[in-house]
Image 1 (spheres, rainbow, N blue to C red):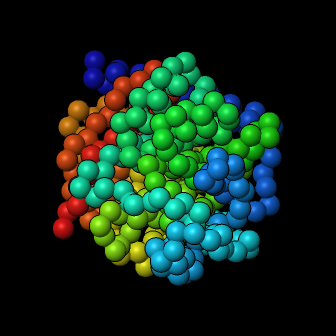
Image 2: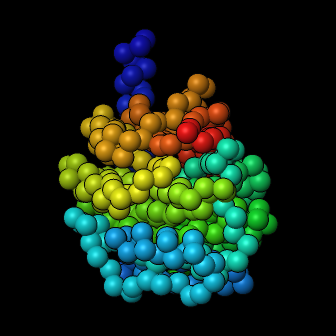
Length: 328
């Protein structure tokens, strides 16, 4: 029986992989890829600004400038750089937010969820619940339509998005929303080797209440299908490079697509490089593919208070959440 069960699971996983590849191929034929990676920023007045935000050494200067003054236009560059195969794009994005006091490092609630392009019934209810219970919300496979934007606004959150591509003129990618506007942000975009469909990451830096250092939060949707580890490793190497100079607390989370032992090892290597520890889940209800969990939360400089993985029917991924506090 155990052997037969194993075969059944493997067959189910293979069928799911085949259907995902077929669906992705259809979507790929209908998408628009911009020459430069797109970052979308919500401004204080609720309007959306499109920029190219490059990760690089200028982030440190912009963090200093943002902490010194909460007013003034964002300072950044419109040029993009690349790390390996990743097209990376950075600027201060919190410059017009005059009431920012920072996230509370003694009670920080974070949730990460692949929302499956809002294609399943009930996602509105679950996102509303997650938003109300969180200080930082990380979404992958996000379709930036009016309904999603309104739900985030109703939760009192500010957001930044790294667009992977446009479908029917609507941006789809990873989105980070939080109780306060970020001090700075940058995005990275990589292209799936097989499907040529991009995946994105967005890195945001937040002020922490009563602290001089900042919290960096990385929201990742990792490469899914590839014949080798080269592109997958390059994506995480680029993330490590972007955060090499950051000395404060750090969170890396998202749909990491760790569906092989080798992929999980790549993530562990970047975690070791950045001094990250993985958040455990006592009742582990995370989504599984080929017998491996896909969604993760890694932290540095923060202690775990509680964690959860909640079963939902509103996506093919279950959201993962953690409550954290200052580990000093």
